[in-house]
Amino acid sequence: DDDNSNPRSETRQPPPSEGQPSSSPLQLFSSETLAEANDALANVGWTSRPDLVGAQDDDGDLTLTSDDPFVQQIDRAIQSEMGVSLDQLLNPAKVVNLERDLFNLRVELARLTDNDDFLRADFEGPLTTEMCDSGGGGEGADAVRAKIAKKEKDLAIERRSVFRGWLKNVFLFQALLSAVLSYVMATSPATLFGRFDWYNNVANMDTSITVLGFWWWWLFIVPSLRSRRPTGLEKRALDVAFLGTPILSLLSPVVTKDTGVIWWVNFALVAGAYGYFYLVVGEENDDGDDGEGGGKNDPA
Figure: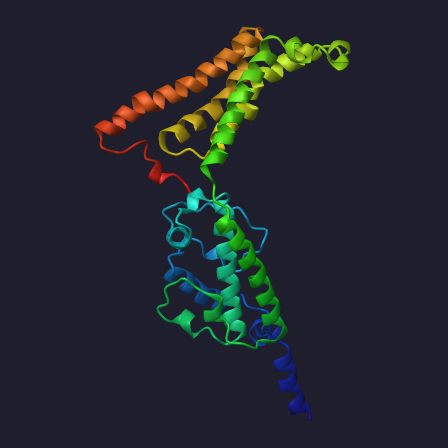
């Protein structure tokens, strides 16, 4: 009996450290599993982010560029299905994250249903749910199928949400309207708010509104222009404007207290950024045959 008890104790000790991941179908992310899943990711071009295997739903901080093979694969699929590119969707980052999550869940489902032979072969995507699901798998597989179904539904909605041209015009109109209103706020706030009691009764309310007037360049005008998702030279100009306007708004009051002048200084910065990138950088690119601003190298 003593001889039989020792082997039992030896077999009960490993599970907490090593045996549990291999015996329980829900523990999928052992070193062996990660290695095989990473091989599958490598086959579809996702070799630089092995830490994404098994990532949770709330991990939305990906920094994939348009040159990433995984993103290019998604882009080609969307172009064939919708006739538009990935960056023309309303929320391309969410589409990439959903595709990532679905890939991980499908790999998990393939393992739960003992249908993961293709992951060890020279597999090249796209990876579909039907390819991974051979049926069965118990409650763990059913839970994964439910997650996949939900994410596939969300992905279908996001793929159909195209960033239309009329929406870009809305943002442009918003920027122009904000520019007019902010100028009046910075120079003559009583024109807009003089009829209201709170404007006349609250101390220094006029000063607060005039200051807000020139800060609108950074708060509303430039962000509205950036919301149009410009590319190339315009994108680079607005990046400079977005970084430069808060600096000017902070430092200009040291030189002048005239909020109208500060408003025009912010305007000059934005206009100067456009002028520099279109007239100087654009001509340099034309001379070097680099195209219009090199927008192809921008992040996705």
